[in-house]
Amino acid sequence: MMKGSISLLSKQAPALLLCLAAAVLSQSASAADTQLNITGNIKASPCKVNVPTGGVNVDLGQNIMAATLSDAGSATEWKPIAIEIISCPATTSSATMILNGTPDATESAMYSNAGTATGVQIELQNTAGAALGNASTMIQDINAATQSTTFNMQARAYSSKGKATPGTIVGAVQLTFVYQ
Image (tube, rainbow, N blue to C red; front, side, top):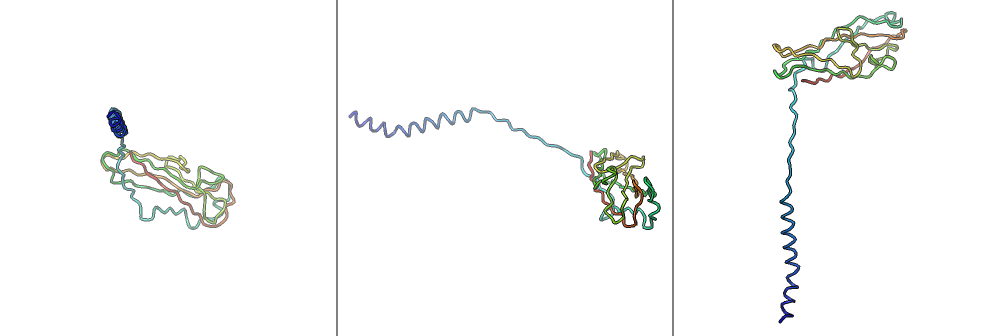
């Protein structure tokens, strides 16, 4: 008789061990606390950039005489540029404009001319005379009454070494806006 009960116990032993292991594991799994961390970032809503479709075109002049840029440090007249920011939400207090373009190889604070004229750079400044080269920024407060602001700049053709040759002046500057 003893032999039969041992046989029955040895057949049930794996099942009992499995149940015991499951009970121990379920106790340890439910004993651990877990913290759920939730984060976020609320940003200012975007304003509207009031520019013509296709961007802003700045004509530095179609009849610039090569003699105008023949001396080192010579330049054309400044051409005004105004970029208007409108329809800003009431929660937006300022706007930052970031300028990115290809810097000139010899005058890093100016932009490279991709046109056919040689010995010419494109100079861009704010109206106070500070250079606005590649990666420059301008910050403007948003007028609370009008919910708008204007970034005023100026551009011209410049010849750092003189001896500019006839041809076209072509450049592009990407403007990126961040609102606070």
